[in-house]
Length: 112
Image 1 (cartoon, rainbow, N blue to C red):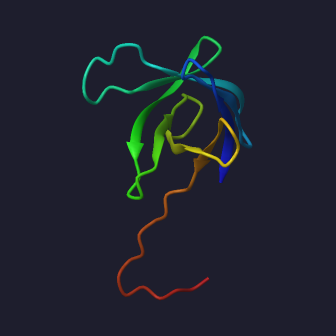
Image 2: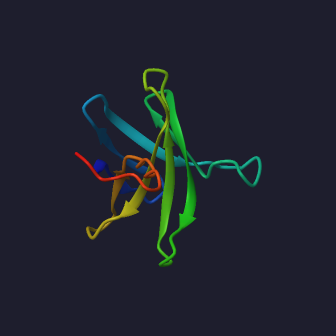
């Protein structure tokens, strides 16, 4: 599910909006000038003066580069993991979220 759309600036910042049933935010995803360690985020995510999350550069099995995004807020029951991926439009990126699926118990029948 696409929850946001972004454009990349010449400075390497992504600017756009996140829209869900509970979030409606203008957001900036800005590169971290100096990482403080190997596991430190590559990007900080902000809305106004408030930090909303972080992102790390990743490469898919198919060789596509994307950002692994973690959004968090005290109002959320838990953090949100999603991915910022390139779209077919020039300079366009989509923030994609997918609900974690629970593993099926072995031998369980499929009922609904």
